[in-house]
Image (cartoon, rainbow, N blue to C red; front, side):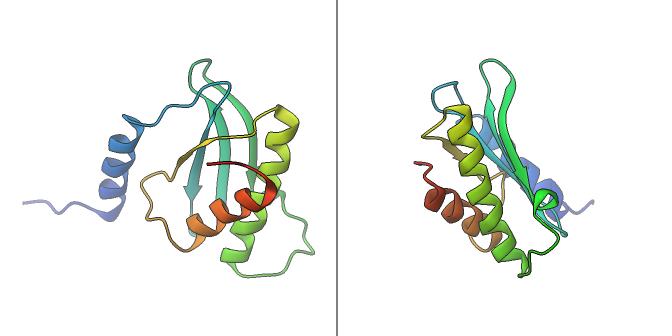
Length: 118
């Protein structure tokens, strides 16, 4: 009998949520990926299959200092700026199967502070 890994459980949750959440050009999907080192977020138009805007911890300046939660909040703010340039004001949040707390929550709150509505 094989055990189900944590990653497999997350992927199951993600597939279940993706069956219900869909992004459009007017209201794109804010997709989140969290790794052990950092966090990534992008706005996706699922109808056209295009990424409208993206932001990640890799794009933060080297002078940025803070823990991973503060890093996620900054990524959310930068994504909101990129979204405004792309013409998106409101989004659908896709937490990617992760629990809504910690870094995922910080990214969402940072994006709201930046002006995104969801």
